[in-house]
Length: 474
Image (cartoon, rainbow, N blue to C red):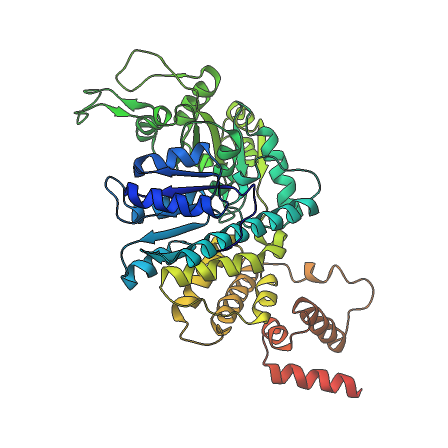
């Protein structure tokens, strides 16, 4: 029988068979696991997990009301670090594969050998403990303590700048004032909004809408809802997103695209916290926390008269600027590995092994599309991948082609050739000096990888080798 230390975290059994619950509980308590709870009604599981800290969950698959197959992904979504042991009477291989893909820690077939069962539980608790230790170590390396750290679990980063941003977000999350989230396309502004919502502790839902392209009538209907008969075609009452976000958070994406009439209505809502459904005359109170996001320069739009100054200052009481990927390049390996796993699972392929130089190549790229662009690159590469080491060719082609397009676009837009040489004082550099500077810069950016450096320069690796060899001989 496996040893079990006292003081282990709570173990939760979820099974509609009371005989199985009794026998399993007896085995666990006999092995020293005294904090054991059980649920025979699967509908109570999510509520139980919401108010109790559980160390290991043992889950049956076939139950009335909500099956274990339905519960498993829900639990993984809300508690990604909770080890879940599936224990069921089915020995079907496809069931086991499904459960493991959905994040089960292990799959056991009833009747389970007692020794194996206890060994699995102990292993799950050990993994949980190691995860906690790693988390504690990460936390100790950070400057300062981050409260509500779990709210930021979905954001993959080890950037100190991002952790500093999380500190600020934690401090403003509980504020009733709006928060403006700014950043380039693809940096993950909605993910930041969800982290703010989780950190706020609000009990209601977060409702997210993209308001780009909504005219004033559609914006008003979406935001406020309407009464039955409010206009032609309104044959039933509709609740707006403000009502759905009651007690929670309302996230308005692409707020820079809001038309002038809609800007007035949003400003009034922020100032008065009261709104009317279309066709209604009863004032309704809004208690939703407003978060907005944009990739546009709102201050510039304000100066051009395209965005109301009073709305701008009302929305930007708190401002969270999300870093572009190029300013957090230390996260590229983490994100790359994460997307490789996601892509492989999505395409039902083994996770391919990336070559070490891939990280160097990606870190040298500007990433105008940020994290979304990196994700697209990796999903495309995994879709093309057959076997063995992940190929670099697709990444090189995408990066070098996009670099060339940017360079050509700069020339088309009329870059002044004279301005390009303003950084040189006195005599112009010779061709030889220019070539040497370019090669040195390319090698530095490529961290010494000649293949990548040659791609930066638009020449073959052999051509670069010849130039380096000639340089050494001089």
